[in-house]
Image (cartoon, rainbow, N blue to C red; front, top):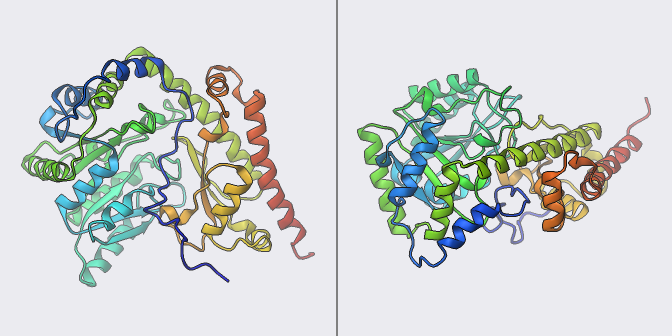
Length: 415
């Protein structure tokens, strides 16, 4: 019988979380946190002066100058999106697919979420014509769309939206009076930074874009939650920031002092942090490309990964073979691949795709080794794909998808 209930794996109770880097904590970062471990308090709501100054320096180096009164910090990007949604009001538009944590924050406030299709060659940014059509349809049905959330460097698709698409979508959103939240969590994880042009919507529409960055994307371990928001430098931005701080205060969403110290250190981008980030991005890019080759060779569809520590795979071409194994929807596919691969493989329904679509997000952090020693070796090796533990993990991925491909070929009708 087809499952109609998620059986405890709902989109709120089961995130899934951001793809972790799978690496030991940077020693210098751990030392900063340890030195602040005796501080018993949390930062004030919105962050303390030192953290906000560090955030301004971080953004200024990326062409987005900011002053401390334009910035707010919170223990994770979900708290910031929750506060922004509460402060702006109305309904929210997001691309399909989108990060798994976006929609639950909106729905927890009783607001409606409307998914908008993306172009075939990237995710994260809605097609501008689909966006206009969705806004008009929602308004015709009595809705009140006010906010568009997008991500130029995307989770779950691991793609980077081209500037021309972003420009058209931003213009369309501005024409409809929408405020934009640009989730730039993965902007520092470009696999080929010298060959990839990444622009922030805040560079195109500075008066109507709030930038959000979760530092666990590139700078902090997954269990050290800290995130930043950069508001427009105008009166409406000031008013929005004030409302967001009210919501963060009501939620008690404050960053612990030791985590804030580590975040401030990472935002300063000292040499140990930048060297680790460069090495980690290079490692994850190589592993992601190897996984991409394996799934495409098996007949699956996947855009080449350009950022992050993940890729998004469409197993629709193998539907017949999967059906023979009792897999008919994304939840069943998630269960099947999680069991076969021994690692989380969240289905596309977690990211706003239809349950019937056979899509999953695969993360590369789980393929780097089972112990801190193996993971460190993966990071420092000039040929990580040749290490025995990485090779074993990739071989399991290849074998799992090859088996499905073989099943599909056996079930093809004779020509």
